[in-house]
Length: 115
Image (tube, rainbow, N blue to C red):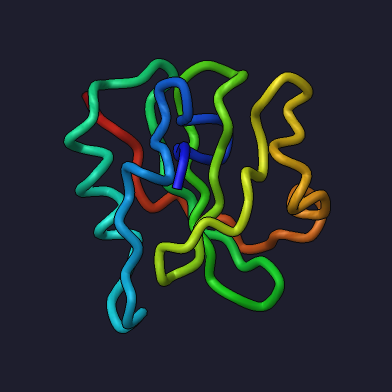
């Protein structure tokens, strides 16, 4: 796992895949684990956010924050990285979820770093 912080970018100031431990049994709510781990990191500008989406029929979490070039990672509810859905040089992430911006639905801001 290499880098992580999602939506608009929490990579440079965002999380990395090494920073977030996957939840093997998927029985809990991964967003709570993700938020607790983000709270342990230095404050980012813009602030880190966790946004829940429905993508490809499943609940996912996008982590954003940090510089615009920072990758925004998309996680499933088990803590597995699906893709970098945004950020990067062209703001198109890593190219593994090219339809995310047009097909993800039901965005809900779960958490925004208040610091």
